[in-house]
Image 1 (tube, helix red, strand yellow):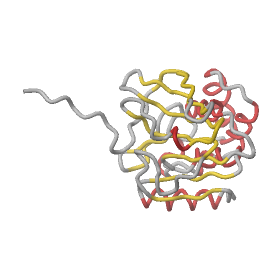
Image 2 (cartoon, helix red, strand yellow):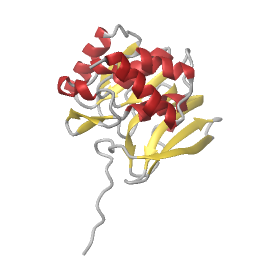
Image 3 (cartoon, helix red, strand yellow):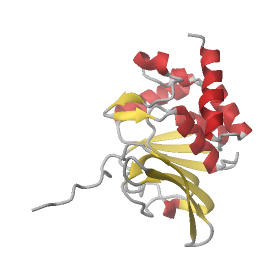
Length: 218
């Protein structure tokens, strides 16, 4: 496979048509070797418009959704970012290229270790990986963040993540039920004032522990 041609096609045929036109984001996607962050068995599919299985019934997002997330957050070089769900580490790498530092929380120890190895191999050092369950927030490190990216969905929106934002901080989160979940951008506009904007519809797997409970029927 011609990796550079496949990467170019991914950007031109998947990402740009999904209204991702921010040049900084496009450059980060072009310069981050996605093929190094997918499981060995999936390398031939690294640039395909589909989710990729990672293990533990978890999946890597489609490239266009990752790029749209990055664009929506308008990350600045001085920003500190919190990522909920490290996964493969690919999105972590992209966030780190745009921000000052990325703090990423991963539920599974083997995912965290594999992501650290991939990030090290890619020469990305402005990251801190933590292991733990952040499905209801991250009280272990409650510092304020400029950007928060949540890589799993919630059945309905709640404010457990937005409270960790600095004034002016931005949160990307997906809420709702398949087949029409809503990707949202939440901005902390003041002390306890938040602007919540629906960006587009998509579907991603719920965060572990945040699936909607089935209704009880007699």
